[in-house]
View 1: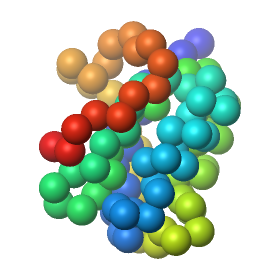
View 2 (view 1 turned 180 degrees about the vertical axis):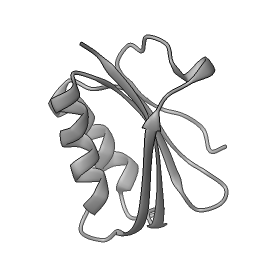
View 3 (view 1 turned 90 degrees about the horizontal axis):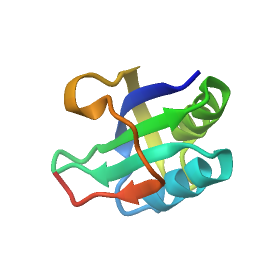
View 4 (view 1 turned 135 degrees about the vertical axis):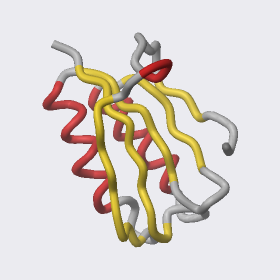
Length: 95
């Protein structure tokens, strides 16, 4: 079974290595998808993989790297164009 989550992370999450860390965690757990900064200061990600692997990455995302301060995280099932098969884990341009 594969799950695909759309994740939004708020707080001090830009300029602190958050995307690097999230990408490393995704690759470590075999999770596919992408991560990007958003102009509003949040980080957005799509996480796709086995439920336990995706939950492990989400658990890390709730803390982030040591320089980050996560104030809020929202996870929901991906819908529409975001709910599709992904290959690897990418960084997307800021949106």
